[in-house]
Every structure is written in C-alpha cells, then in structure tokens.
Image 1 (tube, rainbow, N blue to C red):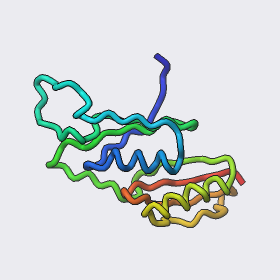
Image 2 (cartoon, one colour):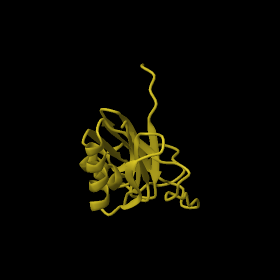
Image 3 (cartoon, one colour):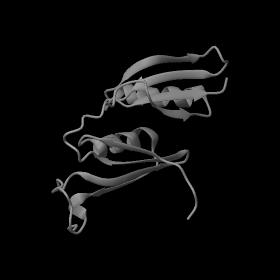
Amino acid sequence: MTRSLATYISLDGTTGEALEHWHEVFGGTLNILRYGDMPPMEDMPFEPDPQAVAHATLELPVGTIAGGDSMDPDNDYPVTGTAYSLLYTTETPDEARGFIEKLVAGGGSLGMPFELAPWGGWYGQVFDRFGVMWAFSCDA
C-alpha cells in the first residue's frame, strides 16, 4: 500500500450532499457507500440510518477528500469557523476564481476576496453552504 494523506470530514447527516456538491464544483471521482448498501454489522453500538454515509471519497487530481456522516448525536462539532480550512492551490488565478464562483453560487459566502496578498501570491476564502471554509491560493 502506498502512503498517502487525505482530508476526512464528518458532517451531521449532510456528508453525501456535501461531497456531491464538491464533485460538481471540482470534478474528480466520487464514491459513496451508505449503511443501507452494506450487510448488517454485528455488535454495532447503534442502528445507523440506511441513508447515512458510512464512507465516501472524492478523488481529485490534487488529493482526496474522504468522509462519513457523524454518528454521535450527543456531540455538536462546529463546522463553520476559521480554525481550519481546505486549502486548494490552483495553477491560475482564473481557475481559483471559477471554483470560488461555483461555491458561492451553490449557497456559499465569500469570506475573503481573492486578490493579491502581501506575500506576493493570490489568496482568498469562501465558506460553502455546509459551513466548510475553502481557502484558495495561487502563485503570482
């Protein structure tokens, strides 16, 4: 097995919808496995919703986003915030602008305009409709 590092995100019942949206925005190959698609699991501590996402991956040319629906109703994990983001470095500023426009058009909001940054490259932020912060960068 080859070593790799992927981003894993767990949303409260919207992971499948989020990954489908990101697939529309960024392309790639999307695979979603729902609990209802799997054989029953012995000794499961809870009865999962058959439509809940057990595991999903969005394979992009630049990396992988994986995820599954949160199964802990007692924990409210904050999604919206600036403590983390998914950083996407593009080849051109226009490519980044296109992704930002698609995320905003899909119900997101601009967090920081995409413009030349003090360090000389391009940078901007957008929150998608799921509250996930996407940061975009590009060399000048």
